[in-house]
Picture 1 (cartoon, rainbow, N blue to C red):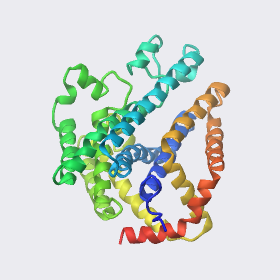
Picture 2 (cartoon, rainbow, N blue to C red):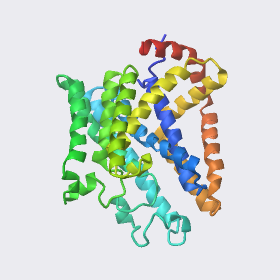
Picture 3 (cartoon, helix red, strand yellow):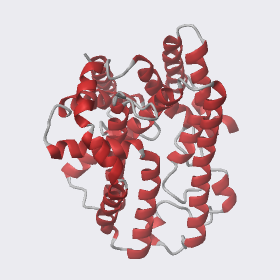
Length: 365
């Protein structure tokens, strides 16, 4: 019998669960932010913690890259990763240009807060200088995929590859936060650090991507105690520094540009969810098993869900503005429809849940 701990694509189930919770968190962020919902203290606090989902999304993306491609040939992972990177960039361009042609951004009041009139042009979209669609992670993520074959080669060819990858993550961390390089005046530096661009800063977000890559190398489900403790200690350390500087402790205030405090809190949340899913997996309740199966399915299809949930948000706002709160109906309806369309795979995940629990227990023992 096949080990259900690893999917057909070689994906560790913990990766699926973490990606599932990450995409749900990201969708909730967008529903809160784009529906103009009343920001009570509780909602602001909830929204703030949810922003760690963005870090988890990128971090576990690094884990997926290692797990999915470590056993493939060099030519296979080069071709596949470069093709995937190009595919995602094409989707970004297509979405941006179609929306540019369909929407009248001079009269659409909802987008006035995001787009300066006159800057939204095809050349600016092609060169990542104009914001027309809120999927800019689809610019950064392809570049992370495009450079990941280098780290796969390191993992395969070099002596002590785990140490080299960990050192690489620390090295980029040091460059980002302990040097003046990010502030250097240079077209290349401007692009890598998103100075004047709409992308997530590539070199900053490479750090959590490499952390995820490294944790997949060492088997992060086996290191959950160390991950939780490390995340907690680093979050407390940088939190104290922020307090001494009289800055905000809100997580989301440190997301753009990405700060060590935000990265540390994301690592802490990763450790928390590793324990959470290890605990919840022990329940035999059908609703719990169903929720886990649904989360796992969403986690295995995150990029597609990410793209199409934005299509639903955009269309809802475009058609029903100013009733933007309707996205709380249309987006969940889309997710339910997605699960219904993929009912066969959902049932498969549900039926194999008992075997999954047994194998997860062995994995972390």
